[in-house]
Image (cartoon, rainbow, N blue to C red; front, side, top):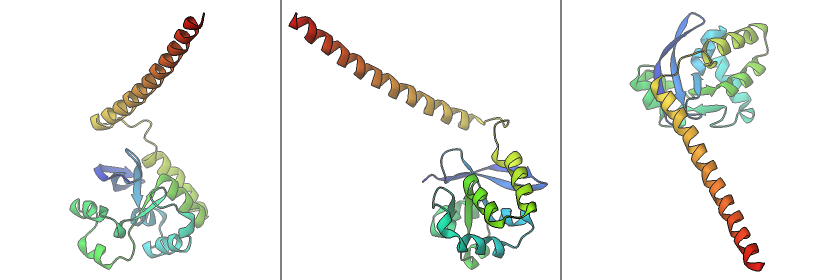
Length: 173
């Protein structure tokens, strides 16, 4: 499980929301249930009830994280995203990945929800056209270099094995 980072804010469907990254993997964006409720014009209680009724459909740390069970709440409180009062009175504070959000839309299953899903994918989760900040670029570069080093190590092992087999054949003749 990864640490949460708050990387500024994005204006999504006319509302400023925090760019919450991590929790579900490096660079993976996520969204609070309270923001989803607001986008869909539904009470937070309705969203939480739907999540709780269908909890078996959400994979923990893949689709959803209950922040009340984790240390992440401190990060969100420190950035002013959640007040201490709201944390204290909340039974659940859900954070959803893009995949978790897609599952929630399936549960809602109304036209507005599907329309909002398309807009949120375009405005928030889809970062293809967004410029990566230097840390994101560095992280991507490091991941690519690690893969190359691993591939090179595997190649060297294979080459050593072939060389050993060739030496054995030469000695045999």
